Image (cartoon, rainbow, N blue to C red; front, side):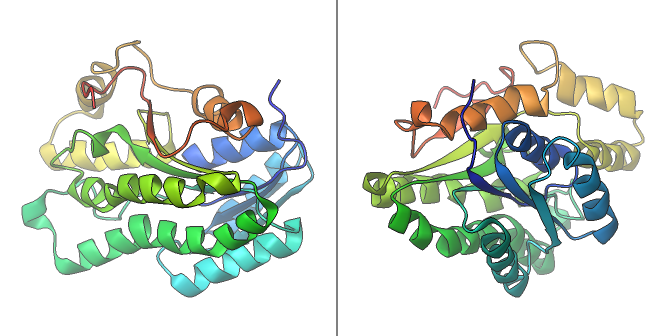
Length: 265
């Protein structure tokens, strides 16, 4: 049994998909959780549903590309939960992805960097001082296996998220002796609304049936022959790393991809 009872967890972009599943995993195991979304309707729906499992779940509207919004998010989470022990940085996708380099413009890159990199930097800075004062903390950056094996149609995400590997390594060395671990999770394919929307746009742009793209791009490369389950395959890992049993694992990137990646580094 994972013991996260009483831990205070902030999971960003968490009213659907990956973030929602992670929030549910922590809530199910007794943590107090704050979720966020840009959509008020999605936030209300998610809160009502997750609170059926654990009433200690809070939520607020937040935009991962807006610095003021991120500051307000952390202030709110600290106020309603009394602090933040575990930060899970999850994000959606850039609106124009999938996209290749030749089709991008500077606005795409500015948005992507704010979404993936600057949000993680800002949120980490906002929670680390309190974690240091308590001599305990966990930070997770949720990323993708494609950071190790970049895909041309995911150029915005793969380039903008890759610096988080360096940030993870640096922060782990700076804060490891304070009881704080920092890791990047390189995710494979999970059945999320965002993944379906992204792949549907790509299939439409190429004039190829969605089912064909899904099989070739998603299912065929997975060694275990199935897509992941967010709560069981990803949530369980984060729960383990959030206990004392996972306290020796820090400064690394962990593949949770069903064997999709061919990388050995």
